[in-house]
Image 1: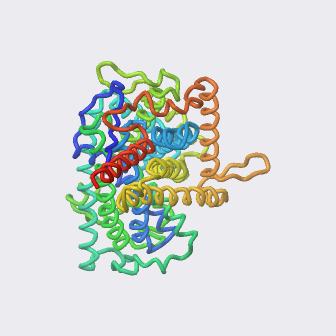
Image 2: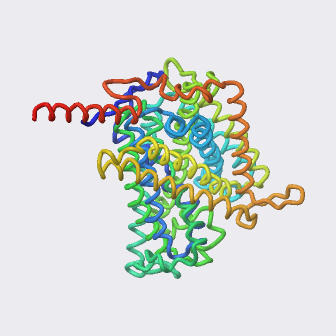
Image 3: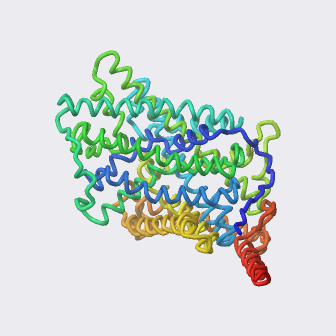
Length: 538
């Protein structure tokens, strides 16, 4: 006997069936912002691991794929827009779900918004040739544009999921097309010897793990690569607005990770071969280019002719649109996580309000914009504009936490999967569990590594202690989550105390059982009945 678990999700007011598989996959790709992620992070990865950067592209894909698979599995049985919060709450308990799944998602998105706004602010001026402002990270004009950027994209998300998704499809098509064009032209120039001095011939040795300088360098590079891959899980955050919510979002997330692997590997090899890893000029090891290794390559790759200048401008525009895409898809999942938490009475009910016409979360969306603006302005002021590197790195802490807890939630939820055979054991328990273990190891190492203030771009002095910005931002953000959880625990005790509520109100029985344990009890009862029938026949 094989019972099929089929959970019905209570209608929350979101616009169901608005997103197709292709659109969901496009959102998954756009959410990672390939151009923005590579531009802002690739240089730091090269500093950490040198020529083995393409190897890390492949290795970082493994935990990301395992996490995507875990989310696919959990979404198939419980397509709730709260995703990591909902799954970890139901599988591992309310405190774990609230902090690791819920706050982990909220914190990661909030921290990412700062770096995205900063990129947008600088690149808008660079696009129009105002380098005196665009190259100045501490410019008040960059800060102002970054704030307006957050508000404008919040408004688009407020107006409806269909408008948001259509914009995402256009942006990701432009982004990937320019990225692939740049990579192909760069490889052609490397092949025919017209690449600039310092270029390298692609080598299989770049994929040799034995050439990694140290375990510490490997882990540091992996932390940065997790950020580059992060974002595809937006596909499941908008699951309740997707056609076939139990299947389409999970498949789209997995497909997105494979498409990202191909894109990142091609672009990384091409950029590393064309620019080299030197510390001067366009070299990837040049500290002056570490926050943006792509735009400085524009004219070198495409040439100085009219077409080359147009394409170089398009490269800058692509990074700007990439920042737009990822800002928008940072707002979407965060708002829906908060909305789901309010629906399940883990946050004040005001965060569960839905616009009657646009069918989007209202207070959750607007509150994220307000919090993002406050955080961005504050951290920008404290760091004198050097917000990008440290805020990007801080994101990794919370990404590893909430994606890792999703893997553990799947492993616990399907802890009896071995009873159904090897396939179910591997796909529903072992693979998600391994993804969770790897991401939590990465989280633990991140805490250890960034406790050293010298590893942060910006440092603070707090009394007798010298603290790095990455560690400081991460700890303060985590403590803010603990305080918020304690307040919610005080104001909404029912969520934290009523264990039965984790199976309602959004889960109902529909020709199936609510929990796996009940399923196995029924199977065992069926087997006993069949055995009794066989005995009677004999």
